[in-house]
Image (tube, rainbow, N blue to C red):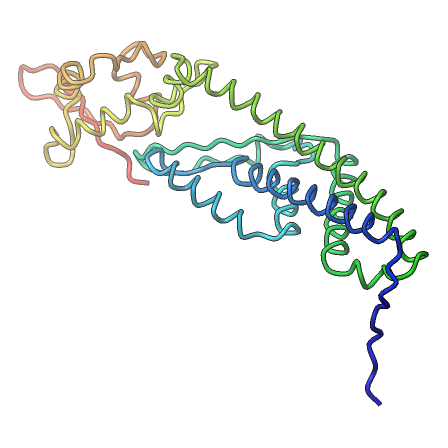
Length: 288
């Protein structure tokens, strides 16, 4: 025998419109949460070639728009929220991108391991709550009975408090990102930022030699002056001095161009001496 679906009576409890309004309030607040969540997930990390960053950012924004709330929360806990990383320095590796300039920035909110696990569980409960409100609310509550409306009303009051708490948390995190972004924007025009980005000179004075400006100049000189695969250092110095006068060994903590070749460990070196001539230094890039 086929199951007969009960048809609601025309006698609507007085509380039903109030329940409908409170359900709408919860759903609207959830939509506000999801919009903010998509913005954080799309902008908390950006990596790529400097000349394609704007395109990559647009792609990340478009990708976030199509994700479910559950997927977005997973992305948030895997990228923005993070427990402590005691061995962070050991886990970081530098990607070899040749002479291409890459940029990477990431905003993260670090918390204790216990807080992180509690936050993940709390966010999962929010996703479950959202799914119940969207998909199963009228299955759970009989809105054509007074008792059902009363139960739904209490549930929606508690639900809104939980949703609103998560919204306020998310707004606080977004403000933290805005503050960090403002600090980065302030730093970018500085000489320290230019030194690190363009020439590989870190704030502590150490040098990232593979991507340093002076090594790029030496490699460029190779393309113009090499003889049989080797470039005479004296000729390269003259060419760099006329083309990139700001690139000097002292800027990188070196006493001479020979010091740069040895310190950078990016080049092979050989010496030659013809009759009645001083010793000539030649170099070529190491093959990785």
